[in-house]
Length: 379
Length: 106
Image (cartoon, rainbow over all chains, first blue to last red):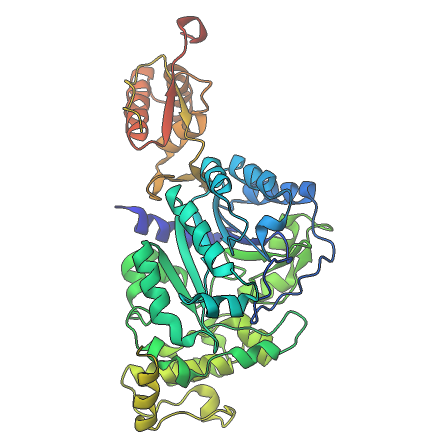
């Protein structure tokens, strides 16, 4: 199958030319769940209208966007969502949906298939209904989500379970994986918990410490060899990402329900508003967007000389959001890099921030403690 | 999926409406809706794909192809025939039959 090298070439070309290949579009922040870790303000402060979103979609199609993700909030709370979806498919986007699936009925699942939706990512926090419902704060949500997931499967949609990991559900990660396997769907487990949009850091109380994540990080499934992307996507992909932190602003972007354009959903750097300017003006003309594009890995102040850089998955957005700089280190990434390096066999790994005495947390370098922590993940 | 229909010059190829696609710097990429395979079409194939609107016959597309790439009509028709057959088998193109009166012999 030639798909992987083709994807590599496509991504390389889009990054080299700054084509907006991937767009994450939140069409609403309203939601019918109240997840404890959610960073959004669920009030409607003036969502774009149906007509405004259709106009933006046409501009994105014209600019070369192929991969379009509709997300939220809960997308199906928009009364015009199927109209927007039909318009997006008419414009021949490859559409992925992110949803809690509570509002997906058998009929709606069939309509999604009929409209040409290819992938649907459904949030599921545990294989234990009580844990899931405690996180969403909606009694019965586990059963409803699972039922909707099956409706989508019956239609032949590619279903992926998305399971953010936090203190409330860390013990259930093996069961979620087993559930996904039993259902025959793929899954993603992500320990990224971010501050709230208003800057509040209350949600970070739910974030797992690196020591708590060790059982997960030790699983080869979640800790693939560093060379894996090169093998699967081809050399073009590796070259494309050489010396840039990530795809944000290069071939990927985020659009809020209010028309604000950001380099990434995790990078709160508004570069323009689609009610005031065209997409092309913002994407190619914003000085802030260009600033993000100009960042090179080799220029990152502390990271470039970090001894465990190969184990680091620094997110520029999180570094900006939590540590105040687009080019500076991320304390969270430093902590996780130390954990990953330790798993890889590096004795006493020291991240760039710790080397400068600026990492406040402990290094968890006591081997006995690590063995104990690892055992916590075994059910 | 129904069995592929025979491909003859008078039929009008049409893109599968469930396929997603874009053109980037002259390269057309198409995602197969059934198996999620990403296909990259060469310039000739991309030209034929973009003109497979369900309104033009294979002969009409071949005529446009001959003009665009400065090749003789027979070669263009053979290329069109081969590509359409391939993409029909991959379910990226569907074919619509047209009455003889609807098909230009230009």
